[in-house]
Amino acid sequence: MLGYDEQMRLAVIEAQHALEHGDIPIGAVVLDASGRVVGRGHNSRERDADPTAHAEMLALREAAAAQGQWRLSGHTLVVTIEPCTMCAGAAVLSRVERIVFGATEPKTGAVVSLWDVVRDARLNHRPEVLGPWDLSDPVADECAQLMRSFFAVRRPCSEA
Image (tube, rainbow, N blue to C red; front, side, top):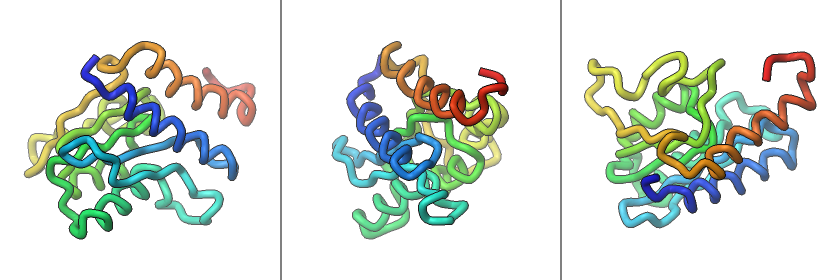
């Protein structure tokens, strides 16, 4: 465990906000180099009718606005679920130092599950990646359980 459990709990709170408007419960926070939260976001695609309103995108936008620049060097993106290709690409392009995610996403994950977008050797910037294996079991389990619970209600016949 490398010390991101408390920050992941903040991302979980963000994920719970997504449920309030029927969105998939994914939450994210961006930390500056001192560990202060400078960006927050939760999925808002349904509420905003915006296909790019993913938790990571919103948190990165808020962090960039707070910092007054798009380069987020030295920053950490903490997200409840493994980022998709769009969000993984945005993390690389924003130059975050690391990505911490709480649960893998076997259907759309672009950090370890389907692709490894963020550590492709052809890129000029490759963030450090920390995953569920770097968090305490209860925190990682909570991130995964948010998704399982959400989809169990909506897709009762789908795979767990």
